[in-house]
Length: 228
Length: 290
Ligand SMILES: Nc1ncnc2c1ncn2[C@@H]1O[C@H](COP(=O)(O)OP(=O)(O)O)[C@@H](O)[C@H]1O
Ligand SMILES: [Mg+2]
Image 1 (cartoon, rainbow over the protein chains, first blue to last red):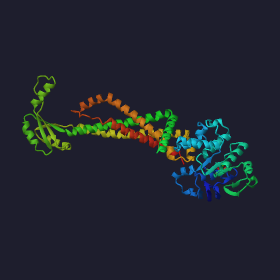
Image 2: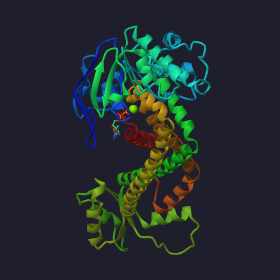
Image 3: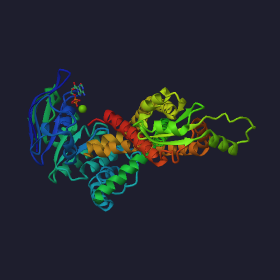
Image 4: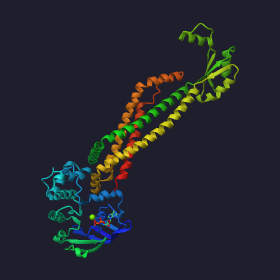
């Protein structure tokens, strides 16, 4: 589903990613770990085509993102869900409208919006908070809204860049477990984090970045700070 | 099809939100653009009217030749008819002219001071400048008069007005573009969250930018509407006075001089929408990046 071939990314001559090779299969669940500045966000931005690599190729579902022209980027992004550390919710819109916002912008009719938003909110356990504003929710609930919005189109890929960065440990674990449940339905999930206890509690695939290089990549892995 | 309509509806809603967020800036932009369009439309109407005036004169162009006393006007008319430029010569004897004048005005009982006059119609108006000097060379002709001098003056004024109009409209358009740029930039800043979300969730840039372009177009449309109102007011209250002035300038006024207000407002709307939408498109292209 996701493949990186000899990917380098420089910012002003300084490498943020160094010769990264990576393959994540369809339906796989993986952590991308590493200290701050390791290149996790950069790798994510390459995947949703916010950035292009300085050299090398990035493939998503067999499509070489280097070959994508500007007009095709929205089509790529409609086939993935992106989850952010800062949630990126609209503060003046209700939970329901936040999830429905993009569907409506795409011209989906109101009955269909209803039909898609309700199950998405049910998956994240917010079926009783349709009319709440983000400011009335806890951090964990706000991130659940972000997740509902990311899955509302039923995308084959979910990218979450430090989704638990603003949450307490207990809530963080709930959010990651929720993402794991979603992946069990066939969605490829990639989570970047530097939250060691969570990664170690899950015992899933761990791809470890340091200084822009992949240093370890293990199934049932641990996030071992000593190695960094 | 329905989907396109729904998208269009949402774009309109977003445009409305943008206008609402702009507050007093709306009025600033619209008034500056309105001034620019009023000057543009006013100059357009004025120059078109003057052009129409000159053309109308051209069609009825005739040279009046005033004859020296002691020559038989019929004989002179026959001679002048030989010139190739001449289409027709009409004789107004001093007696006839005097009687007409006494008929129209109360004139003291003095000796007839008027000359015999020939009204010479030309086959083509642009031959006036070649025929008039030839006529003046004739002994029998004391003087000639033709409206082309006035026409030339009016044409000169028209050219000056056109230049000044282009210059002022251009300057005001540049000012408008700056203000529109600032206004749209502020709206983009205020909506940066929405824009970012839409972009990251795969909504096309056409949809994202459209509300801003529509907002600019709305300014252009509103300004053109206001400018039309101003020009309409000018027609109602200033026109009669101007007509009087023109009448004193020229021997007669052709009918229907007005270059249609409808055409002018359409031109103003076109220019306004072009400037408004163009300025917004440029600004949103500059500040909304993929
Ligand atoms: N837009 C940018 N311009 C310049 N340097 C950047 C930019 N984004 C990231 N970097 C640099 O690239 C490196 C990796 O950053 P990042 O991918 O954000 O790391 P992480 O998400 O793992 O903390 C850092 O050294 C960072 O300073
Ligand atoms: Mg980061």
